[in-house]
Length: 316
Image (cartoon, rainbow, N blue to C red; front, side):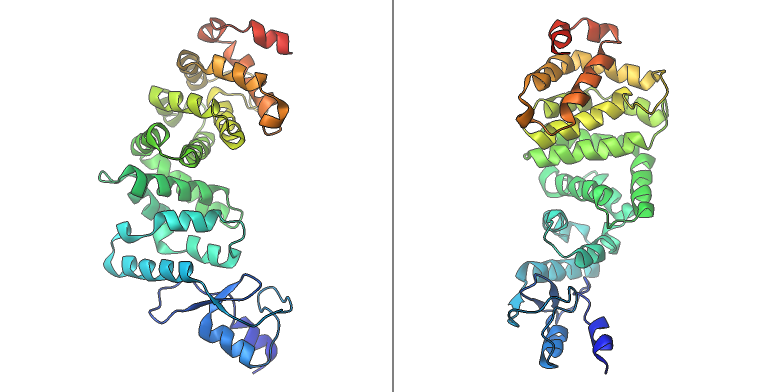
C-alpha cells in the first residue's frame, strides 16, 4: 500500500457511533481513531497525516471528552431520544477555536444537528431552559457563524426558524430574560439578527418580532452590559431591528418605526448614552459608531426625541 493511500485512510476520526471507538490524540492536537493512527505509526511514519507536521512524540493521549460524546451520541441515535444528546458539550466543542475543524464539520453534518432536529428541540413544549433551550440556541448561533458550515445549511436553518416564528421568538424571549449565562443572551441576539436580516421590511416576521416588548427589553439590557462582546452583538441586532443599514433605502419601514418606539419606551436612549460615555478601550472598535447611529435613528421618533439627547449632541 502506498504512503499516499495510507494517509487518505487516516483522515481525523469520523464522528460516527462505534462501540469500539477509542480516540487517540497526537502531539499536534489532532484526534484519530486509535487503531488507524497506530497502524500509521507502526509503518514508520513520523508526521501527522492531517497537518503533515513532524511528530516530536508518537505517544497517543486518549481524548476522553470526544469518546464520551461519541458514546452518548450513539445512545441518542439508537433510541431516538434527542434529550440524551450532550448539547452543552457539543456547543463547547464547536466554539473551541483549537478543536479540529474536520471533526467539527463531521459533527455539524450529523442528522441530530440538521435544521429540523434543532428546531424540534427549540420548539418543544417540554424543553427546559438550561438543559435544552440555552445549548440549542448556542449551537444554532454557532452554525450560523462558523465558516465551515455551508450557506445552504445556514439558509435552511433560518428558514425553519421562520416557519414557526412564534415558537422561535418565545424560546428567544425565555432565554434572553432567564438565561444563567451572558453567553446565552449573546447567542439569542445573534440568532435574532440572522432571522430579522433574512426577512423583508414590513414582512409578517418583522412585525411579529417588533410586537414582542419582552424581547426588546432583553436586548436593551444586553447592550447595557459591561462586556465588549455583549455590547457589540446587541448593537448589531439593534441596528438591524431599527433599520440603520446604510445600504438600505432612506425610508424607514413600519416594523422599524414600531421597534424604535418600543425601544425608546424600554430605555434604549439612556443605555446608548452610557455606551457612548465609556472609554474606547471598554468597547470593540465599531461599537461607538453603531451606538451613535442608533441614537440618531432613535431621535427620528417622538418617543426617542422625548428622551434627553442633549448629551449626545455634545459628544459629536
